[in-house]
Amino acid sequence: MNWDYRQLGRYRYLWGLLAVGLLLVTLLFGFSSGGAKSWLRIGGIGIEPEEFYKVNA
Image (cartoon, rainbow, N blue to C red; front, side, top):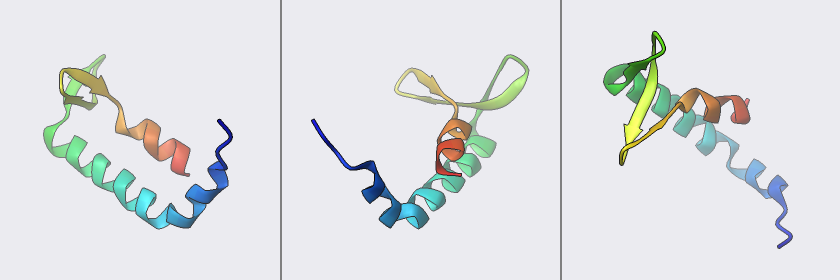
């Protein structure tokens, strides 16, 4: 399947707001793992929203 990932650039501000929103949610509802409170548990799965921000930057 060929998909042009550059089309995501049209939504860069939306992705940026989503990333910042996830960081704020992590600040409020995050849990600690390995000494850092940077994880969210969604449906029993732990994720690090910082990784989404790195992709966006």
